[in-house]
Image 1 (cartoon, rainbow, N blue to C red):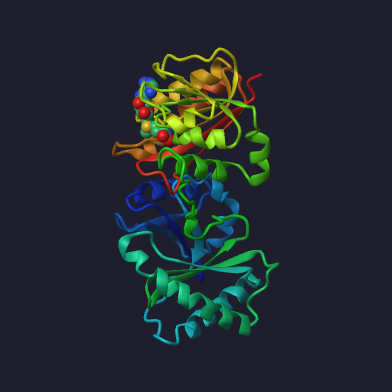
Image 2 (image 1 turned 30 degrees about the horizontal axis):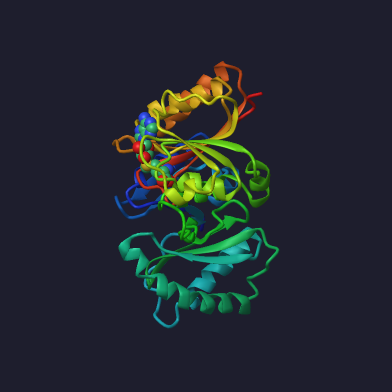
Length: 360
Ligand SMILES: C[S@@+](CC[C@H](N)C(=O)[O-])C[C@H]1O[C@@H](n2cnc3c(N)ncnc32)[C@H](O)[C@@H]1O
């Protein structure tokens, strides 16, 4: 049995089966035999190698950003139990030394985590206090090196029980536990604004954002009221047509950058091609997917961010079906495109999609 024969994946509590289905699809496509260990609402999934093989090489083959439901991941050891209180660092550093020797590498960084559940969150204070102690102990054993290509992860299920493991630098979530800390902007009309902000930050690097969201660009927001998503676009200098029968926020309208169209989002067609389509409507996901595909077939937009609500039982199946619908529709029309999906931290029963295409 190899030391790192498991993979820990963190996800939103309640989405363990989607996270499991997705990783199993990825690893079985690579001929890797594995099984899943998880509990409903635990906020994590363990993928275990069926024949005790090492999983760290496998992680290097999969692009973390291609996973929809995993918030963070790392290849890990079996659970370390009965960590002695006050001397927890001793067995952990010893295990880290073994991992370092086997992988022939030191560690660039250390991330401590726990499941994002009510029970898990009680470990937040403990992790904050314990991290500097462990960092110090790792440093003393010369196990840290900023230039290293591996990161060390430690996930606690209680203060004496944890999984230790590694991810490859650059192929993991950058925020601890994959949870971005966004502040609710005081003047934004709704909390939904955080969903679009997180989506933009997830799908586009800071440099890409400057190219994709330029002042003076035009956007359409379908299902815009009261205006949280429109607010994010206006903040970046875009001119927005907000389509919704409901009322838009008065302060947002006073910016002069928003045109409100009280009409049905499913029949609205823009007068000219826009740079962005965004859509946040509580409608059936296949219905929304067809709507988005139509916008691209008619060359009405260059890019779109939209969400797919998932109130049904077979959520993973539905996401795959929506993705296939859009991919097939655009491919059949000869439209080169990129469709990315993510279950964002601010998404509840939904995933967010970003579609861009060459629609000249
Ligand atoms: C979740 S809210 C949107 C919130 C908005 N993104 C924000 O950040 O403030 C969904 C909106 O979609 C609108 N909506 C639903 N179906 C629609 C349709 N067929 N046409 C236009 N608007 C629609 C609703 O009126 C509602 O205001």
